[in-house]
Length: 145
Image (cartoon, rainbow, N blue to C red; front, top):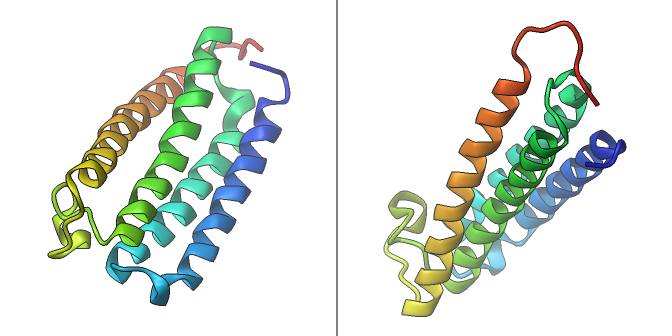
């Protein structure tokens, strides 16, 4: 991972936060406004998570492989979460995987498959990112770079 990973996490976090804010402005235009609200919140919350990760990046006791795994799994999970819910909102889909936000909205088979694949993969990536970061925050003398 480049030495500038913490700056990149901050940049990507603010970008995702901005995308979440902009998504909130599109709610009246979406086929499922409730799912759009979910996307709005996912962008904001995942953006804040990436910013927080950028701020604590220098404290992680991880080697290059662990840092790369934490970085890419967190970035993928954050952006995929925003995108999956936004696609569901635009398509009027998503009730299969997200019944509360999806309401009674069901998309085509392909749309529901895309949403499900994104949600399942981002869930695994988010859990992986958190586990790696938690491991990297263990006590020790110095954080390797």
